[in-house]
Image (cartoon, rainbow, N blue to C red; front, side, top):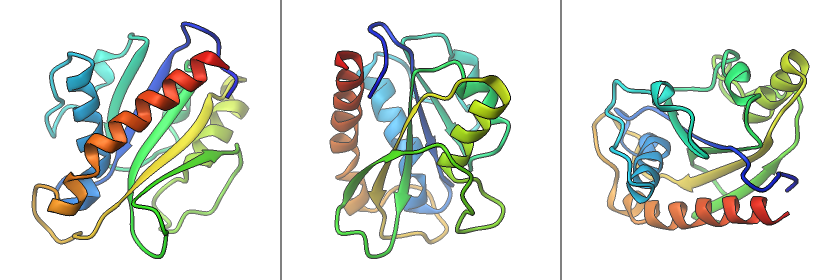
Length: 169
């Protein structure tokens, strides 16, 4: 990754906190905030009012094009989300390329598209990484499944490693 020392990082967790494991992104953000000595974000707080740190955190229900303006100010952007399906890993790291991609669901944006929009509209896009965690219960309700909750501390450690790697490159 090509970021400068003392670079700015944004960790954006997304997902629906009221669909059990779909709330993995926000849960990881709050666990990271605890490690950073910051209070958790409640379900009605997206974190945008707390930007301005070396490592910022936000939570979103879904990715939207307006996010491009915010992310253009960062050197590293780590998206955090839940995944389902046949991915072999419980915790998957994918380095993203800027580009317009058709999302799986038509009302959502793909993380690569957010990066491409930032570049096109603001002349800069951060290095992008998607960290996805295996979810198993997407029913209506609050709280993560036992299996998903066990992945949260591992995800925080991986985020810290990604930030450290970016600062060394």
